[in-house]
Structure formats: structure tokens, C-alpha cells
Amino acid sequence: MTRLRSALASLSIAVLGLSAVPHQALAAPPKPVPSVSAATTQQATSPSSCAPTFKGAQIDTRLTQLFTNYGNDNSRTDDWTGADGTYSLRLANGKEVWVFSDTFLGQVNPDGSRPPVVEEGGTTVFLNNTFAVERNGRLSTIHGGTADKPVAVMPPRDDKHWYWAGDATVAGGLVEVTYQEYERYGTGPWDWRWHRNVVARFAPGLLSQPVDVTDLPSGGGVAWASAILKDGGYTYVYGVEDLGSPKYMHLARIRGQSLTGTWEFLKADGTWSRTETDSARLMSGVANEYSVTKVGSGYVLITQDTSEILSPHIVAYSSCSPTGPFTGKQLIYTTPETGGNIFTYNAHAHPEISGNGLVVSYNVNSFVNTDHYHDVSIYRPRFIDVSFD
Image (cartoon, rainbow, N blue to C red; front, side, top):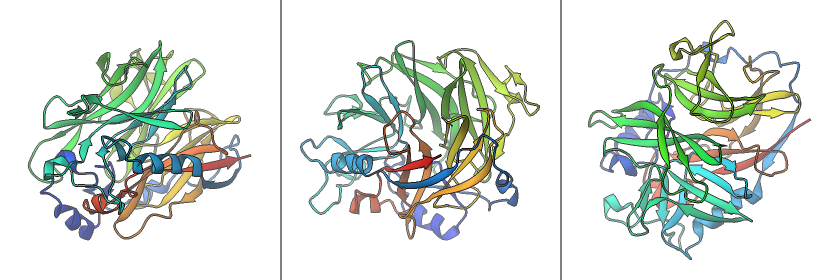
């Protein structure tokens, strides 16, 4: 599934036709929403004085091919063949942890298709969250449960709830991964909603199950954390208030490294409050997943452009401060996969990953769920390198 939404009735009808597939096996049903307001483009004009100059973007062949080859490799038939989400962090031992939400596990057929999911009588396992660990250019899949009965690394409490991953960080020697819990409240294909935020802490050597799970602020209708940035002694946590269209950025911070500390929320007047409902709508046009990264003396926000419905455009804003305002909207890439049933979403940066510039990932998906069976290449992350002066 995705956090994207569609206002197009024809696309909604196409997704409605997939309702026979169990909820946990649906990789792509967006929810319909109202049309985009002109107010969502309000941040597009003057650039920040600290703005780095955008030079260009190119496909990151190494990373794109790494996941293509890994997904197609049938030396194991119980590991990763596709996923979305695609957050990352680097561990002290040099390993890189890739944090995924909805994930297909299983085999790839010689013709580039995958078997149906287990719920439909096939052999493909579908989990709502997993990890992949990379070291020296080699990947391995991590899930909970056993090889015979895999479960999500952050398993749901019951069959009406599930967790999608947000950004992750390292604090006190533990991996801290944010998750948003969603819940199903009816039988209709759109009868699901965000419920709450939590952080799960994992030992770096045992990522298959959390050490503990702590509730995060969830009283303001904001899904934390679309992005995390450590800067100047604070951990900044960026969130999204998802009204379908528009989507609003919110910002919190914690002094120190751990997300389990005391949260403060940025108010409209630029001051901070410990009351979550004081959190201000800072800007619109962000996606459910985005990033804020220190580049030179400034800060760059990268996001899929949600001021346009189902936009193929990845854009950047800049600021002199991690708190914004983020201005000077620049188009940095147009995803070539978009068209027909296929859409792209949730672009964000990976500053800890080596590339020829700032590494940015985005997800690829289809409105027709059976497309994921016919072509395994659709539901995999793509990577680009973005260069700035």
C-alpha cells in the first residue's frame, strides 16, 4: 500500500476491482481525495540566501542495479523481491540498514513475474515492514518470525492494524526506527486510517525483533517521522499532516540523540512548545516521506511534489535553518517510469550513502495490483544522484 492518494475516479475504480485481495497483500491502493488547492504552491518563489545551486541529477546505477540484482537472485527463494519505503542509516560497523515498508518475499520466475501472494494460494510472502542489510555491496533480508513463518520485524497487534516505517536513527548503540500504526475500521477498500506513532529500538546485531517499543506523540494528527535530521545538538523530527491534498509539514525536536527524549514542537510564531497541539503547519506540498539534509551552509528539503496530483516531479527547497522557511522550489528530476498504471512517490535523500552527489530514492508502484505479479521490476526503489554547487 502507499500513502499516496488519488482524486481520479477512473483510477479509484481500477483499485476497487482489487478488493478480493486481503488488505495485507495489497501493495498499491491509494485513497481518493479532493482536488489540489492553489494554496499548495505557496512556497515556490524566492530561494534562500544559503541555497546551494542545483547542478543536475543522474541515475545512480550502482544502487538501482544492486536492488534489481538482489531482487532477481533466486539463490534464495525466501528473501526480498520488492518493497517500498526505502529509508536508510549507517551503523558503526560500516553496515547500512535499509528500512522498508510493504515488502514481497519469495522467488522470481524466469519471465520476470512473481507468484501470487500466499493469501491467494501462491508462494509470495507479503509483510508490512522489513529490513535489508548491506555490507560491501551485498544485501541480506531481515524479517521476524522464522524462515518457514516470516512475520514483519514490527508485527501488528491484530489483523486490523499494521505498521509502516518512517525514518530511522542510531542512539545509545541502538537502532531507533519510527513506525506509524494504521488501522482498518470497516470493510471498504478505503476504510483505513493513521492511528498513532511509535519508535521501536533494535540491537544492531539482532534486527529481527525490537528490544522495546515506545509511544511517540500522536495527539495532533501528525505522522512522525517523515524525516529525521541531527544538527546542533538536537534531533529534528519532521512529520506530515496528511489531508490527502494538501499535506502539511510539521516539525519537532529533541535535545540529544534519542527519540525517546522530551519532544518540543515548532509553533507558528517560531517558538517551541512541549504541547503537540501547538505544532504549526509550516508548509504544504510535501509528501508522506521526504528529507531535510545539510548541504554546504544550507539545508535542502527534497520531496515528491504533492502540489500536483500523482506528480512525477521530484523537487527541492532550501533554507538557512533546519526549521525553515523552505523556499526556492526547484525541479530536480522527473521520474521516467510514470504513466499508464504506474506512478512514483515519496522521494527522499540518503546523505549517509555514497554516491556521485546526494543520493535520492523514490518508489515505483501500480494502481493495478496484478501488475506486481506480472512484472517484479515495478515495485522496487530507484536511485538518483543529485549534484549541488
